[in-house]
Image (cartoon, rainbow, N blue to C red; front, top):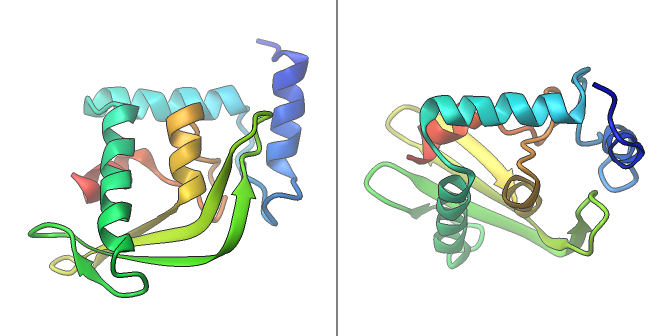
Amino acid sequence: MKESPEIQKLEKQLRSTNISAFGFMGTDSRSLSEIINSDMSDLSELGVSITKIVSRMKEITAKAESSLGNWTQIDDRLQARVDEAKGHIICPWPHPAGCAIRITYVRIPETNQDFQWTDLNIHLIEEHNFFEGKGSPYRIEPKELVKIIF
């Protein structure tokens, strides 16, 4: 199916952009809609909604933010740390949205599993159902995220 000119323009910007040195599509050859549909299918299989995921990501970030730069216990199995830099990064979609340059690191000490996301990741997931393309440095695998945070 042929994408609209607006979607084609957006996808071109996501593949190579001034916003992110590596782009948001990574090495993924799939179209934007294929990436989103695949990730949404994974979430559907798991029975987890975008709303639930984003709520949990925001909860973890907020708890860790109070201990900026230090690990803090989130619950009986998760620890998290937030690192922040000055400034904002804008959303690559054509709307006015900017996010703090902040990374949340999450770990499960018992299993040595770890995970990370940015505030922009949260926005992209919440507003656009976009976890980024495979090969992108900030790609979030939905199935892995769900295993870690729930």
